[in-house]
Image (cartoon, rainbow, N blue to C red; front, side, top):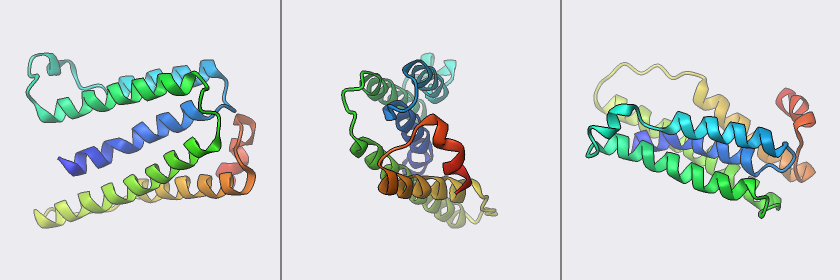
Length: 149
């Protein structure tokens, strides 16, 4: 169950990156956190099959995102350290998850076609790490300039 977890964790990191970024208005961070938690929830079938480990994993990630999202919305952790840790986690998990999923598909002799999603997610995280290392943080108004980098 490690590859599915590694493929779901980037969404958790992305939601928490937004929530812990105090340069974004709190109301917008709360909306994005709510959408992220809803996206992580398992389907309604979870209520009838509570023993399914796949659904349990989805539910656990949704609860973890909700709890840490609530902590992030309190603005208690204002330092850039939280953003850097989350970005390193995002880059590491996306690389590990994509490599792990690729190896699993190769092991089952399934046709593998690697898309740009994992590569772009990793590049996106690295660009943001470099931006924070250079500037300290960023705000919503600066995002278009960061994405163009």
